[in-house]
Image 1 (cartoon, rainbow, N blue to C red):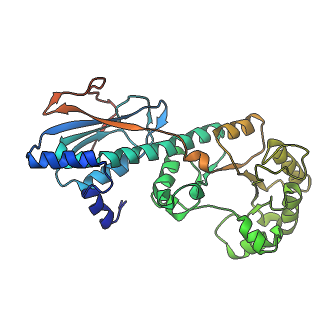
Image 2 (cartoon, rainbow, N blue to C red):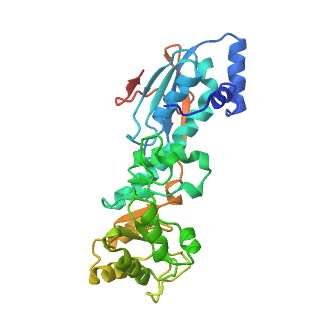
Image 3 (cartoon, rainbow, N blue to C red):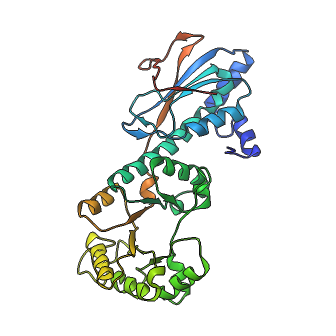
Length: 337
């Protein structure tokens, strides 16, 4: 897979994205004509993390390093623990000294997204979790983040960029903006969505008037079987008209919508929820046996930390490392060609 443009690869080669001390180290070794072979060992600091970014790092090494390197590593999707060796890179250090900032950053970012996604997927009890984190970070992160969310078990992503690295198809409903342009008429907005978008499930966004029960029924009565689902996205500072208490989307609100739809013969309509969902909030909804058919999760899936560290643990075939580090061969390694 082509992850980077030729221009970006040239910048990487020149150390544009590397900490200056790595660039200086590379320059010193070149001047000294020191081509000593080493083994660089990579690990991270958290237990039960979902490793991601290995394939991307391998492509980085292939694209930038002119000489051959021997790479042994775990696979994207493997569960890893604190201190566990996830990759060995063996070869002349001068050839890849300047890449440490980049490959550690790739692994850190991809692993944190895969791990946070997997945690939410796990507590969702088999219900689909959709990766809606596009608006919460810099847009050029989307390709790698979408792939990491896929490795973590997300059922869907929302941009073409998110889906590009695993040949997926983005999913989505209707934004509040379309309803606003339709004069605040959710039924009308859903109707024209169904008219023009033929290759997607019709899901109405039903909180525009802060009346999820009433709006869900209004849309269902007009669209009938064409309506696949409704999405509740009540803001965290709002209490829905049908409630006396409870800000945002709550289990009680979902239960009221489900009951109203069922009572009027719309049991086929699914209920999706979004708006401030996290691992803890999904767990709370599941504990309350909330009749949710899917969760849309955003910023919670890209926040956290999975810092990686790299150390030389072997030089010229001899084990050598800084104090507190040691060569560790992982039995689950596979050799990467």
